[in-house]
Length: 106
Image (tube, rainbow, N blue to C red; front, side, top):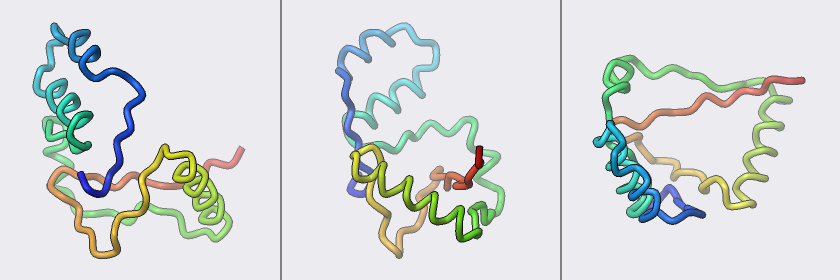
């Protein structure tokens, strides 16, 4: 809650009403709670197998790619669409995943 900013441009109460009959209540309740309190969905069904796997270094090391990734990151942070970097000593909580960052040049 203290690290990951959630700025929702929509009405969470209206979203809740629209999803009233959604069949996957644990997931919906998790997302609604997270939109209100800070994002950390605690619905784990699809993640359990992945959680037991060892961590993989899944990031680019090419200097040109890193420059492009950092420029994109800076643009997204400045626009308020991404949160600031997590603290250096931050440990992933159970269920957290690291998103791969790579460049697909076109």
